[in-house]
Image 1 (cartoon, one colour):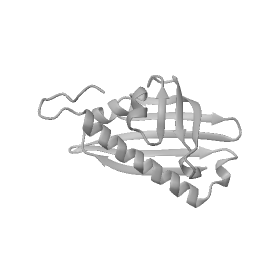
Image 2: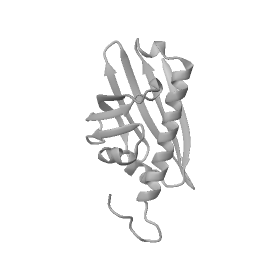
Image 3: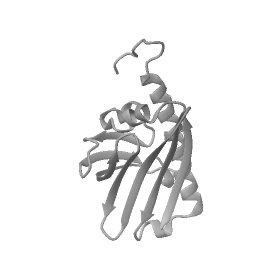
Image 4: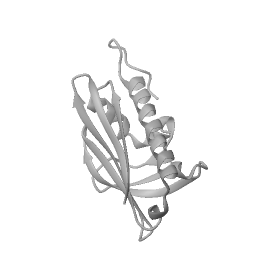
Length: 155
């Protein structure tokens, strides 16, 4: 099994981070990794997604329907995508509350025949793409959180 783990601090509460992560229909507006999604963040739900094959390095877009395997608002969101025998990817986000914001753990566990051939360089490219998504998530949360009692524009 191959594992990708990234950590990122977001200076907003977990509820604000969750609101952005669970809003799949807005992914196309901000997410550089999961560039499109349609569905609901509910346990067992099937969500159609398009994502960049970040490790491949060529910007190829992959379409896949994933299944939500964990959905604990403000704490954890996870989904799994599968191609039997060839690939299983368990993608997850854990949100840890801190006094000054949210500690994000974002990663994926990759198994099956295809990930066995993933090089360290490929995994490093994929990790960098996850880190870029983390930064984009922080920017999106900042855009969506009201400042000084003034509501942000509706996207």
